[in-house]
Each structure stands twice: as structure tokens, then as C-alpha cells.
Image (cartoon, rainbow, N blue to C red):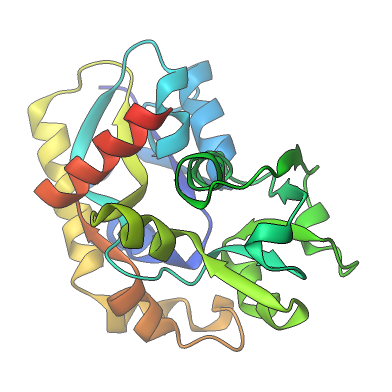
Length: 246
């Protein structure tokens, strides 16, 4: 097979996957793109990537897709980096701004708002970089490493994974590894082994990326307690339920 093009997310929660891909030795001939979640989906859709870590909210945009791994970006409790930040309580929010970087969080907050919170808020998508603007917005969905420094700017913080779990009793899946065509079983086995290597090597991951870790965050706790990587049966049920709302 030609060089394997892989698109992965550039956030802390994906560092174990990136470490496994780059350091385990299971994959040899590959090129790795690191970008925001929404761009992973676009690169796979355009054919630039053979495999991508695709936001769950983008899956309905694909005509055909194959979930190819035993691992995902998931949560079985509060995830702490996918937040609705607000200066008003839920029932008083009129407009929610949506982080450009993610489709899943944008769709998740709409599902929560319409189906569970029963609010009447309208939604407006931000441009790249606008979520980090220090100007106080009434309410904003923000994701990723930048949220470690944003929570204290707002009076209210709602963890979207925690809200989903509270209402449904199921885990939430933010992203899954996807291809748009069948790939050789041998290759998929090597890819899975690479991801597994990273997931079981959190201390090595934190040491390897020590200069790139976000400040003001307990990164070890985040990777071992807030992110849940196994794409197991409960997460598959949670993902299917979420997709049914879309």
C-alpha cells in the first residue's frame, strides 16, 4: 500500500494516539496530519486522508464510512474540555455561540437544548479563533485545550458530556477512527496496536510531550480519568443514540 495518510486531532486528549502512531514502531510508511476536529473530517472527505479521527457529529455527512478501531475519544463522566460557558443560567440563555473547531459539540449542545434542557436558544457559529476572544459572550460552546483557561471567565459552566450522561445514562463518544473504504486487515491490526501502545503509556506520553502540555491542567488526571479511550459496547450504544438524534 502507498503511504498511509492519517488525520488526527491536535489536542491533549489525542496525544496518546499520536504517541502510539509515532513511537510504537507498528506503523512505518505513514504521514500524520494534526489539526482541529472539524478539519479531520474534511481531510477524510476530500480523500487527502485514508484514516481520520472524525468527530461523531460529522459522521452523518459521510455517504459511506467504516469505524476501524477499538479506540475512540469518549467520556463516561465529565470530560472538562467540552463546555457550555455562560453568564446566565440555562433557562435565560437566548443565544449560544458555537466553537468553529468542532461539529460534535455544536450538535451535542443543540440536542441537549432541544431534547433535554427544553430551552429556546438560537445558535451562531464562530469563525476560527473567535472562541478564545476574551470578550464576554452571553454563552459559548468551547472545546479543547483552550478551555482550561476559559472556565473562570464565566459565571456558569456546563459540561456537555456530563449533561448527556445525566440524561441518557450512556457514555458519550466525541470522535472515532474512520476510513471511507475497506483497508487491509493487517494494516488495521497494526494501527490498533499502535493506538493501544499509546493508551497504555500515559506516563511516557506526558513525559514525551512535556513542553507542549497546557498550563493550569492536571494532564495525567485528564487523560486517565476524564477521557475514556475504549470503544466498548456502552460507548457504541451512546454513539448510536446520539446519531439517532441527528
